[in-house]
Amino acid sequence: MKIISLASGSTGNAYCAVSGSDAVLVDCGISDRELRRRLAKAGVAVKSVRAILFTHNHADHIKGVATFHRRSPGVLLLSNMMTAEAISAATGVDEEDFTVFENGQTFEIGPFSITAFSVPHDVPDAVGFTIEAGGFRYFHATDAGTVHTLLKWHLSRADAAVLEFNHDPAMLAGSDRPFPLKQRIAGPSGHLSNDDAAEAVRECASPRLKALALAHLSQECNVPHLAVDAANRALAEAGAEGVDVMALPADEITTVYDGESPQDA
Ligand SMILES: [Zn+2]
Ligand SMILES: [Zn+2]
Image 1 (cartoon, rainbow, N blue to C red):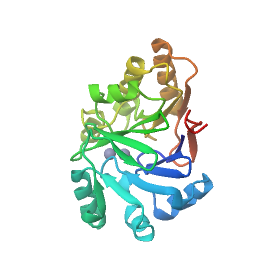
Image 2: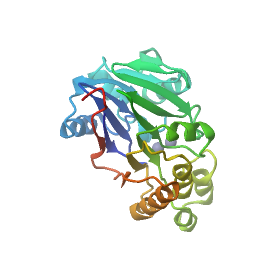
Image 3: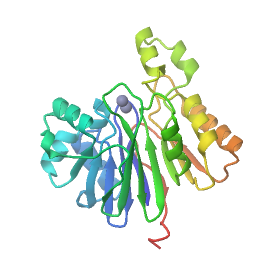
Protein backbone atom coordinates (compact mmCIF):
# COMPACT_ATOMS: atom_id res chain seq x y z
CA MET A 1 0.00 0.00 0.00
CA LYS A 2 1.02 3.56 -0.61
CA ILE A 3 -0.35 6.28 1.68
CA ILE A 4 -0.14 9.93 0.70
CA SER A 5 -1.16 13.09 2.54
CA LEU A 6 -2.38 15.72 0.07
CA ALA A 7 -3.38 18.27 2.73
CA SER A 8 -3.56 18.12 6.53
CA GLY A 9 -4.89 20.67 9.03
CA SER A 10 -7.65 23.17 9.61
CA THR A 11 -7.21 24.66 6.12
CA GLY A 12 -8.00 21.34 4.46
CA ASN A 13 -7.65 17.57 4.70
CA ALA A 14 -7.26 14.97 1.97
CA TYR A 15 -5.38 11.69 2.14
CA CYS A 16 -5.01 8.86 -0.34
CA ALA A 17 -4.39 5.11 -0.06
CA VAL A 18 -3.24 3.27 -3.18
CA SER A 19 -3.08 -0.49 -3.67
CA GLY A 20 -2.13 -1.75 -7.14
CA SER A 21 -4.26 0.18 -9.63
CA ASP A 22 -6.93 1.23 -7.12
CA ALA A 23 -7.10 4.15 -4.73
CA VAL A 24 -9.42 5.55 -2.08
CA LEU A 25 -9.39 9.04 -0.64
CA VAL A 26 -10.02 9.92 2.98
CA ASP A 27 -11.79 13.31 3.06
CA CYS A 28 -12.04 15.94 0.37
CA GLY A 29 -11.29 19.18 2.19
CA ILE A 30 -9.49 21.07 -0.56
CA SER A 31 -10.95 22.44 -3.78
CA ASP A 32 -11.67 20.07 -6.63
CA ARG A 33 -9.07 21.81 -8.75
CA GLU A 34 -6.39 21.55 -6.08
CA LEU A 35 -7.29 17.93 -5.32
CA ARG A 36 -6.91 16.95 -8.98
CA ARG A 37 -3.67 18.88 -9.28
CA ARG A 38 -2.18 17.20 -6.20
CA LEU A 39 -3.36 13.73 -7.20
CA ALA A 40 -1.68 14.20 -10.60
CA LYS A 41 1.49 15.45 -8.94
CA ALA A 42 1.46 12.45 -6.60
CA GLY A 43 1.11 10.12 -9.59
CA VAL A 44 -2.43 8.97 -8.75
CA ALA A 45 -4.83 8.91 -11.74
CA VAL A 46 -8.31 10.18 -10.88
CA LYS A 47 -9.73 7.20 -12.76
CA SER A 48 -8.06 4.89 -10.22
CA VAL A 49 -9.97 6.55 -7.35
CA ARG A 50 -12.82 4.27 -6.35
CA ALA A 51 -14.26 6.18 -3.40
CA ILE A 52 -13.98 9.08 -1.01
CA LEU A 53 -14.39 8.10 2.64
CA PHE A 54 -15.60 10.89 4.90
CA THR A 55 -14.59 11.20 8.54
CA HIS A 56 -17.11 13.97 9.31
CA ASN A 57 -18.80 17.05 7.92
CA HIS A 58 -16.53 19.96 8.94
CA ALA A 59 -15.61 22.23 6.01
CA ASP A 60 -11.91 21.37 6.17
CA HIS A 61 -12.87 17.76 5.30
CA ILE A 62 -15.56 18.27 2.64
CA LYS A 63 -14.80 21.54 0.81
CA GLY A 64 -14.20 20.07 -2.65
CA VAL A 65 -16.83 17.35 -2.70
CA ALA A 66 -19.66 19.02 -4.65
CA THR A 67 -17.48 19.94 -7.63
CA PHE A 68 -15.47 16.72 -7.51
CA HIS A 69 -18.67 14.67 -7.47
CA ARG A 70 -20.15 16.61 -10.39
CA ARG A 71 -17.05 16.03 -12.48
CA SER A 72 -16.42 12.43 -11.37
CA PRO A 73 -19.85 10.99 -10.50
CA GLY A 74 -18.54 7.41 -10.66
CA VAL A 75 -16.41 7.85 -7.54
CA LEU A 76 -18.38 6.53 -4.55
CA LEU A 77 -19.06 8.91 -1.67
CA LEU A 78 -18.91 6.83 1.50
CA SER A 79 -19.95 7.88 4.99
CA ASN A 80 -22.25 6.94 7.80
CA MET A 81 -25.85 8.17 7.65
CA MET A 82 -25.55 11.20 9.90
CA THR A 83 -22.44 12.42 8.10
CA ALA A 84 -24.14 11.95 4.70
CA GLU A 85 -27.09 14.04 5.88
CA ALA A 86 -24.83 16.76 7.22
CA ILE A 87 -22.59 16.88 4.12
CA SER A 88 -25.65 16.96 1.88
CA ALA A 89 -27.12 19.86 3.87
CA ALA A 90 -23.83 21.77 3.73
CA THR A 91 -22.88 21.19 0.09
CA GLY A 92 -26.07 20.42 -1.85
CA VAL A 93 -24.80 16.98 -2.90
CA ASP A 94 -27.87 14.73 -3.04
CA GLU A 95 -28.07 12.54 0.04
CA GLU A 96 -28.98 9.61 -2.21
CA ASP A 97 -25.62 9.92 -3.94
CA PHE A 98 -23.90 8.68 -0.78
CA THR A 99 -23.19 5.03 -0.10
CA VAL A 100 -23.83 4.63 3.58
CA PHE A 101 -21.87 2.38 5.93
CA GLU A 102 -22.41 1.47 9.56
CA ASN A 103 -19.66 2.24 12.01
CA GLY A 104 -17.93 -0.97 13.04
CA GLN A 105 -18.98 -2.98 9.97
CA THR A 106 -16.23 -3.90 7.55
CA PHE A 107 -16.94 -3.31 3.85
CA GLU A 108 -14.95 -3.89 0.67
CA ILE A 109 -14.02 -1.40 -2.03
CA GLY A 110 -11.81 -3.01 -4.71
CA PRO A 111 -8.80 -4.45 -2.86
CA PHE A 112 -9.56 -2.43 0.28
CA SER A 113 -11.27 -3.74 3.36
CA ILE A 114 -12.48 -0.76 5.38
CA THR A 115 -13.80 -0.36 8.93
CA ALA A 116 -14.99 2.93 10.43
CA PHE A 117 -14.87 3.51 14.18
CA SER A 118 -16.50 6.32 16.18
CA VAL A 119 -14.42 9.17 17.50
CA PRO A 120 -15.74 11.90 19.80
CA HIS A 121 -15.86 15.24 17.95
CA ASP A 122 -18.34 18.11 17.91
CA VAL A 123 -20.36 16.87 14.92
CA PRO A 124 -23.11 14.23 14.72
CA ASP A 125 -21.08 11.05 14.09
CA ALA A 126 -17.35 11.47 13.36
CA VAL A 127 -15.21 8.43 12.58
CA GLY A 128 -11.69 7.20 11.99
CA PHE A 129 -10.81 4.32 9.68
CA THR A 130 -8.75 1.19 9.37
CA ILE A 131 -8.10 0.54 5.68
CA GLU A 132 -6.59 -2.84 4.92
CA ALA A 133 -5.22 -4.23 1.66
CA GLY A 134 -3.01 -7.26 1.09
CA GLY A 135 -2.66 -7.76 4.84
CA PHE A 136 -1.37 -4.20 5.38
CA ARG A 137 -3.35 -1.97 7.77
CA TYR A 138 -3.57 1.81 7.53
CA PHE A 139 -5.01 3.53 10.59
CA HIS A 140 -6.46 7.01 10.17
CA ALA A 141 -7.84 9.30 12.91
CA THR A 142 -7.96 13.08 13.01
CA ASP A 143 -10.49 15.36 14.73
CA ALA A 144 -10.83 13.08 17.74
CA GLY A 145 -11.42 14.85 21.04
CA THR A 146 -10.48 11.95 23.27
CA VAL A 147 -8.45 8.79 22.93
CA HIS A 148 -10.74 5.94 23.81
CA THR A 149 -10.54 2.17 23.82
CA LEU A 150 -11.80 1.65 20.29
CA LEU A 151 -9.31 4.07 18.79
CA LYS A 152 -6.52 2.37 20.76
CA TRP A 153 -7.59 -1.07 19.58
CA HIS A 154 -7.44 0.04 15.94
CA LEU A 155 -4.11 1.83 16.44
CA SER A 156 -2.57 -1.23 18.10
CA ARG A 157 -3.18 -3.28 14.92
CA ALA A 158 -1.76 -0.73 12.46
CA ASP A 159 1.19 -1.04 10.10
CA ALA A 160 1.02 2.67 9.32
CA ALA A 161 -0.87 5.41 11.13
CA VAL A 162 -2.06 8.92 10.42
CA LEU A 163 -2.91 10.29 13.86
CA GLU A 164 -3.93 13.76 14.94
CA PHE A 165 -1.32 15.73 16.91
CA ASN A 166 -3.32 18.97 16.90
CA HIS A 167 -1.89 21.26 19.53
CA ASP A 168 0.63 21.76 22.26
CA PRO A 169 -1.47 22.32 25.41
CA ALA A 170 0.73 25.19 26.68
CA MET A 171 0.73 26.94 23.31
CA LEU A 172 -3.05 26.63 23.10
CA ALA A 173 -3.50 27.99 26.63
CA GLY A 174 -1.14 30.89 25.89
CA SER A 175 -2.63 31.75 22.48
CA ASP A 176 -4.85 34.77 21.74
CA ARG A 177 -7.78 32.54 20.92
CA PRO A 178 -11.04 33.31 22.69
CA PHE A 179 -11.58 31.21 25.79
CA PRO A 180 -14.62 29.31 24.43
CA LEU A 181 -12.61 28.26 21.36
CA LYS A 182 -9.72 27.07 23.56
CA GLN A 183 -12.21 25.08 25.56
CA ARG A 184 -13.71 23.58 22.42
CA ILE A 185 -10.35 22.52 21.00
CA ALA A 186 -9.03 21.07 24.26
CA GLY A 187 -12.39 19.58 25.28
CA PRO A 188 -13.49 15.95 25.03
CA SER A 189 -15.09 16.52 21.60
CA GLY A 190 -12.40 18.78 20.16
CA HIS A 191 -8.93 17.83 18.98
CA LEU A 192 -6.13 15.59 20.28
CA SER A 193 -3.17 17.40 21.82
CA ASN A 194 0.40 16.23 21.31
CA ASP A 195 0.19 14.72 24.82
CA ASP A 196 -3.10 12.89 24.12
CA ALA A 197 -1.82 11.42 20.88
CA ALA A 198 1.60 10.54 22.33
CA GLU A 199 -0.10 8.69 25.17
CA ALA A 200 -2.06 6.64 22.64
CA VAL A 201 1.15 5.85 20.76
CA ARG A 202 2.95 4.89 23.97
CA GLU A 203 0.18 2.45 24.82
CA CYS A 204 -0.53 1.09 21.36
CA ALA A 205 2.53 1.13 19.09
CA SER A 206 3.10 -2.50 18.14
CA PRO A 207 6.13 -4.09 16.46
CA ARG A 208 4.06 -3.96 13.24
CA LEU A 209 4.10 -0.17 13.14
CA LYS A 210 6.36 1.14 10.39
CA ALA A 211 5.19 4.71 9.82
CA LEU A 212 3.56 7.30 12.04
CA ALA A 213 2.35 10.54 10.44
CA LEU A 214 1.37 13.36 12.79
CA ALA A 215 -1.69 15.02 11.29
CA HIS A 216 -3.92 18.09 11.56
CA LEU A 217 -1.26 20.19 13.33
CA SER A 218 -2.53 23.59 14.44
CA GLN A 219 -0.58 26.33 12.70
CA GLU A 220 -0.93 28.70 15.66
CA CYS A 221 -0.79 26.31 18.59
CA ASN A 222 1.76 23.70 17.55
CA VAL A 223 5.23 23.39 16.06
CA PRO A 224 6.26 20.30 14.08
CA HIS A 225 9.31 19.59 16.24
CA LEU A 226 7.22 19.54 19.44
CA ALA A 227 4.84 17.02 17.92
CA VAL A 228 7.70 14.90 16.54
CA ASP A 229 9.53 14.99 19.90
CA ALA A 230 6.37 13.87 21.71
CA ALA A 231 5.85 11.03 19.22
CA ASN A 232 9.49 9.90 19.38
CA ARG A 233 9.47 9.87 23.18
CA ALA A 234 6.28 7.82 23.16
CA LEU A 235 7.71 5.33 20.65
CA ALA A 236 10.89 4.98 22.71
CA GLU A 237 8.83 4.34 25.85
CA ALA A 238 6.82 1.76 23.93
CA GLY A 239 10.03 0.06 22.80
CA ALA A 240 9.01 0.56 19.16
CA GLU A 241 11.98 0.75 16.83
CA GLY A 242 12.48 1.76 13.22
CA VAL A 243 9.22 3.72 12.96
CA ASP A 244 9.31 6.47 10.35
CA VAL A 245 7.88 9.57 12.10
CA MET A 246 6.81 12.68 10.18
CA ALA A 247 4.77 15.80 10.92
CA LEU A 248 2.48 16.37 7.95
CA PRO A 249 2.67 19.83 6.41
CA ALA A 250 -0.64 21.63 5.88
CA ASP A 251 -0.28 22.14 2.21
CA GLU A 252 2.28 19.84 0.67
CA ILE A 253 2.09 16.35 -0.75
CA THR A 254 3.78 13.92 1.65
CA THR A 255 4.31 10.20 1.24
CA VAL A 256 3.44 8.63 4.58
CA TYR A 257 4.29 5.10 3.53
CA ASP A 258 5.26 3.42 0.29
CA GLY A 259 5.68 -0.29 0.44
CA GLU A 260 4.43 -3.46 -1.07
CA SER A 261 2.09 -5.65 0.88
CA PRO A 262 3.21 -9.28 1.00
CA GLN A 263 0.46 -10.20 -1.45
CA ASP A 264 1.42 -7.43 -3.90
CA ALA A 265 4.98 -8.71 -4.17
ZN1 LIG B 1 -10.54 19.08 10.79
ZN1 LIG C 1 -13.52 18.60 12.60
